[in-house]
Image 1 (cartoon, helix red, strand yellow):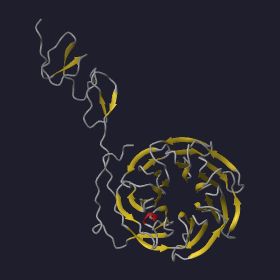
Image 2 (cartoon, rainbow, N blue to C red; image 1 turned 120 degrees about the vertical axis):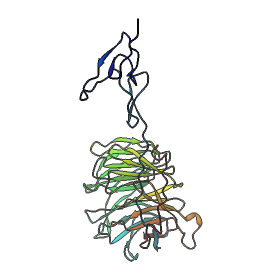
Image 3 (cartoon, rainbow, N blue to C red; image 1 turned 45 degrees about the vertical axis):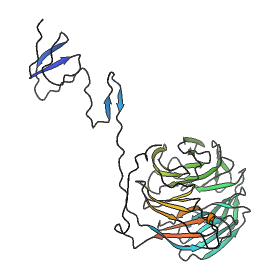
Image 4 (tube, one colour; image 1 turned 135 degrees about the vertical axis):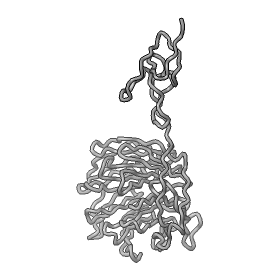
Length: 402
């Protein structure tokens, strides 16, 4: 029979792909209807291809949806003043392995491989007190915000609670089967968490000295632990390359993050945001709580990262085994400053190593414990401006990949 062509004002309907323009030949499966009024929308039998800007697109030859890859959003870095060395404090006779700050920000405490714990005045850098009692390297220190207590852990398997009003040990927590490498205090409840060579993190009741939980699951040394008041309340990083987020009430791991390829020696929880960073020799990675969603890599610190610290101003600092420090902008992952530490006179070049870094309570002082037995204090350069130290930012395309 004779084929009828659709007029430009008509709309084609039927079980065929939606025609792109008028003038398509009609068949027995199609029909011509007059064009509807403008306020009526015709929905075709077959879905139209989504517009190019859409996140969802239809696959050819099927009706399943696929997600269109989106370009990563570029976060412009915030300008930060560079940091400069302000003071070098000598006094320890071994590697300085741990640092903690007093809640009033008047003094800080360091633990060393010389088995001593020293308390220093923050403003002047003078020694106030030396505490002895450990028989091996002091690997972790933390000062309670709510009690006059200092907690110390060491390679001698000991976990000690010091009363700072009497300057003596008032409690010891027994149970670790190997050296204890890290310690953290819960911010709102009287709970102490320690991790060490026995591949588990132990949760202690601060007052009764009883072990509440033994958090097992890691296959190697627990090298870093952090606590926060929101879930997950305990985070551990291990030399088995994994990070575990723990349910404190149940005593079980909520999530295990296996993205790192090297030992996770450092963790830093952001003080204001629901995020954290983890440091290893392969990368520094940022995560979003509560489920540990991967945010981005901070690549470029090509060394064994021993320590991480972050302040309220979104400055993240990483310290490494070879004496290098990198200062990062937290949100963009931009490394705005790189610094090589200078060894103390008389030290070997191989003693340029940074074992611990911590910001004071105000975030304006950075203190590092190093392998040359010194403590170095850094502060922001007040004379720097965005003109003297401009941002030279280049987005890394693969920073969002695992």
